[in-house]
Image (cartoon, rainbow, N blue to C red; front, top):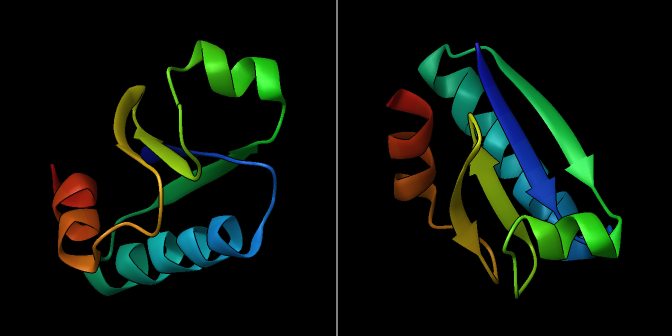
Length: 78
């Protein structure tokens, strides 16, 4: 099971990122636990300078804008 954290204030892009992650996981048959982090201090401590940020299993893999769908599948498959 993959642990995915989405860092952001809860904006439309953050919600879209969550939907993209859940869709990609379903397509790949990967079980994911998605956690949303909206606290500004926690976001900064994770090293996210532009939201939404995404970490997979503790590794920050994306920050700023919507992630690329192909990259998302790569992160979830690794």
